[in-house]
Amino acid sequence: MNDAELAAHLAQTAGQLLLTVRDSGMLSDKALGKAGDATANQFLVHALREQRPDDGLLSEEEKDNLDRLAFARTWIVDPVDGTREYGEARADWAVHVGLAVDGVASVGAVALPGANDGAGIVLRTDRPVTVPPAPPVLRMVVSRTRPAREAVAVAQKLGAELVPMGSAGAKAMAVILGDADIYLHSGGQFEWDSCAPVAVALAHGLHCSRIDGSALVYNQAETYMPDLLICRKEHAEQVLDLIAALD
Image (tube, rainbow, N blue to C red):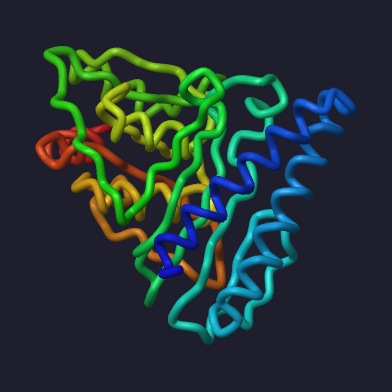
């Protein structure tokens, strides 16, 4: 398999494993989230170490090994993005498998195992789909529980509708699928939250950057990433200008 095929296969398989764990009925609440994270993580990291032994690896659920900084190619994975939504049997959670090359989110796949009434979908860098046109009233996807102040303020300026949603991957993919138009996050994330979604969004022709317009850089010693903007290119300049004008 090439890198894109591998990312898609791993994301889809991890998603199926997660559904099997959840549907077993043996676990609930926090125990389910922990078991899902551990199961998907073990599969992903072992598979990547076998399939790409000469690449670096960073996973949310694995102790960070800074030896990855010596690699030009580093796989960055989030075994369950949206553990709460996964445990609640919602659709807005994801599996992220991304590859950063020289710090750029270059290849990846995002699986949405609960989408399409449980049939699932995998969005990937090597098979871009057509992004639907924007509606007259724009929609900004935000956190279900903690909508970012900047996102709410920009949405008000744009006259955009707020669309609450769970995981970062689900939010980013909502722009591709036409369920939202702008994903503006300023509450802090980590590299695994956005590497695969950004790679997939870029492959679909979307704008991806920090909220000051600067580039997103991956495989850094500090994995914290304060903010993120994903939107159609025609909206990027206006959104960035509105962010810059905020107090």
